[in-house]
Length: 127
Image 1: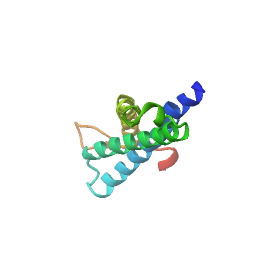
Image 2: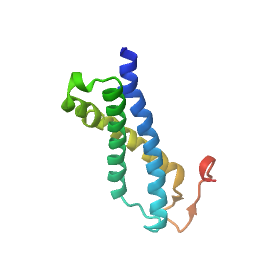
Image 3: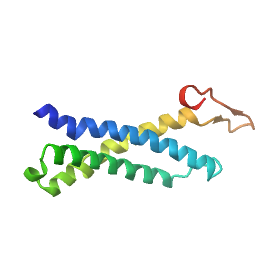
Image 4: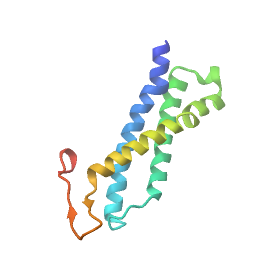
């Protein structure tokens, strides 16, 4: 029963949050490309982190709280802490690592000394 609790409280929300981070970074890149003339707009990071916290918390409450019926044992306040407050450092670290990796993978490299932009070869999804 412990492995099921850990899977519903940690493993499944991490998978959902990782997918949410990737999708939100792609959407951020597409919005910056279309709306902001390919300039970075940092407000989107706050929206992406809030959306990721919401997805983590919803997954955690639905599977851990409702499927395993732990809400009746722990209460709503404890469940809210498990779902939204405690995973915040993990989400922030995941988002920072993913955004830096995504930025280095998708954005071109420019030299500050001259007017030449070196484009990176793209492989996979954005060919």
